[in-house]
View 1: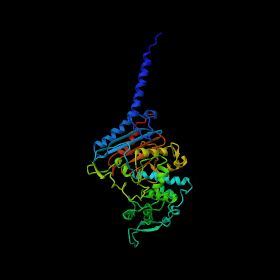
View 2 (view 1 turned 45 degrees about the vertical axis):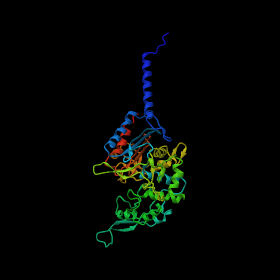
View 3 (view 1 turned 180 degrees about the vertical axis):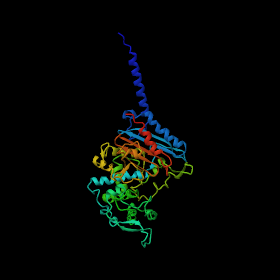
View 4 (view 1 turned 180 degrees about the horizontal axis):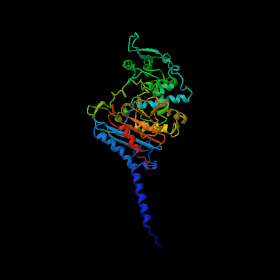
Length: 435
C-alpha cells in the first residue's frame, strides 16, 4: 500500500500553509489593545499588501517634514485591519508616535455632542422642530443683520430686522441657524470681539448668552454656515440633563463605551502621551505651535469651559469605538446609546441642496455629520451615505455604512490643507478593498 502523499496534494498543503503564515504575520503587525478587535485584512475583503500603501504614503509626508507624525486606523465589518503609528508625537524631544498617543480632536467633538443631544431626544425631551428658546430664552427674540441699503441713513455696516422664525434644534444640529461665526458673514467682526471677551472661569453658558446677543447672519434655515452652533447643542444637553457637558459625556458616553482616554481637559498623568501641535512655515516645513505640556489650554486650569464644538482630546482607539457604535446602529458590545432609527435619522441629509461650502459639492449635512450625497461632485471613493467630519488640527474620520468601513487619521497640524494626508487616507483605504 502506497502511503506517500500525492505531489499535487502536498503542493496544496504547502500553499495553504504559506497563506496561513502570511495572514498570521499580517495580524501580528496589529497592536494588541483592549477594545480594538483585529483581524487579517483578507478575512473582511481587504488586502494586507495593498493596505501597506497607507504607511508608505504617510511616511513620505513625515520624511518631507510636512507633518511630525500620524496615526491611521482602518476597520471593516467591525474588525481593525490597519492600525499604524508613524513619526514622532513630539519632534522636539524625539518622542515617537504611538498607537495610544493623545490628540486634540477639535471639531471631531461635534458628533459626540450631537449624539449626546439625540440621547435626550430619545428620552422625550424635545422634537427637532422645537425652538431652542424653550430651554435657552436668550434666543427668543433674535434679529437678523442685513447690509445697509445705499439710500438709507444708518449708523453702521448693517441694520437688523426681526427673525422671521425662531431657531430650531434641527437647525442647530445642521448648522443652518444663521449664528455669527469666525469664518464669514456680515457679523464676523462682532463675533471676533465677542470671542475675545472670554475670561478664565467662563462657562459655555456664559458664551452662549453673549452669542445670542448678536444678530444672525441670515434668516434661520436659509443657508448652511459653519460655526459655534454645537456649543449651543452642548449647552442644551446641560440644561436638559442638569449636568455639565463634561459630566454627561463621562457618565453617559465615555464610561459605557470604555473610552478611557477621551477628556475635555487632559489629566497631567497622561502628558507623556500628549502630542505636540505644529504649523507649516513659509516652506511647508513643520514648526512648533504648542508644546505638549501642562501649559496647554487642553490641560491647564480652570476646567470650566466644556466646548461641544471642539473641546476634546482623544485617541484613535477611543474614537474608533465611538464611531463603531454609530456604524452598528447605536450599539457597541451590548451597550446601546441610540436606536438604529435615530442613527439613520442623524446620518440622513437634512439640508437638501444647500451648499456645504466647507465640504464642497456632493455633500449634504445631517445631525452632526456631513453626508456624501453624490460621488461624482464629491470626488471621493467613500460610498454615498457615508458620514464624516474632521478637526482643525488635521484629524479626520469617516464611516461608510455600505462598505462597513471606518477610517481615522490623527495628526496635529494647523493649517493642513496644503498637503493631502486626509484625502490620501481615503484613497489608500479603498484601493485595498478586494471583495
